[in-house]
View 1 (cartoon, rainbow, N blue to C red):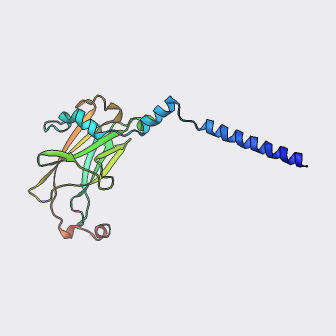
View 2 (view 1 turned 90 degrees about the vertical axis):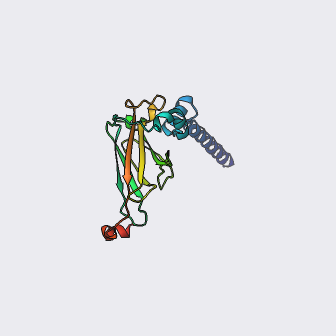
View 3 (view 1 turned 45 degrees about the vertical axis):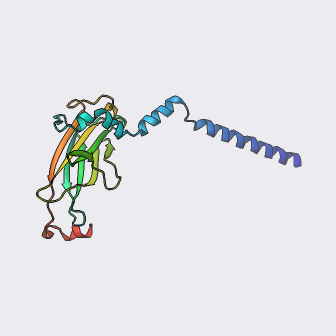
Length: 198
């Protein structure tokens, strides 16, 4: 009887060891091909590197494009608590199909001019001026100036992620400027619904 129990214990140990070995082999992701694919999918663009490389185009006052990669718009939030809050939205015009949508998403960078110089216009939730999405891009920002005599000069830059090595205005790079004047709210314009969502 003792021999049978010992045999069963050895058999269970061997089976457990084989299972652990097979599981480890099946989840190995250290091959160069698998690692490269995952890194490429998850990699985030360095905005600083982009600005260094394309700053002459990104921040030139004369840079404007006819090329439209996204249809971009803005809308003010109805809020007396955050009178400068706006939504910026972009919808990809020519969307790829299938998996290509996710393999080559669109990047939207947001800037605002302060003291004659473009500075990042950051999302209030992520604290970044960078949005990357396959089809629909959106961001919530606070502009800089309020009052009828002050204009917020906002610049939106858009391109596809896989094009970052060779961006060219009107080919694969979109630059859109908005000049937004924000007036103080007339309290009669704010509805009860707006007040409950401040």
